[in-house]
Image (cartoon, rainbow, N blue to C red):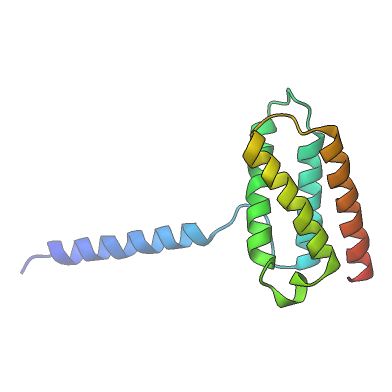
Length: 133
């Protein structure tokens, strides 16, 4: 009786488990608490917006911003509690604008007009979160 088929099946099972667990993990720092996650995303995106063009960490910060945008939207879009809140719809508008810019223009500097609009929308989201709407 050969052990080779059993070892290959065990290795395949371990590989599937490792890939499955790694695929479910997120390095964006979201916790599942809507208010806390929203403020975390706002803080990191504001940092990304304020980076100077020659900053050596710009690519890493923008990459993390894109990941946070995707994780945030995928986590809260279908959530009944947060999906209908004014804070979420305003946040979704801001995130769609920024994600669209990153997709269309890559690593070009973000125009001042877009920065100002995003920061204004982030303030509206923070105000709405304080009000609970």
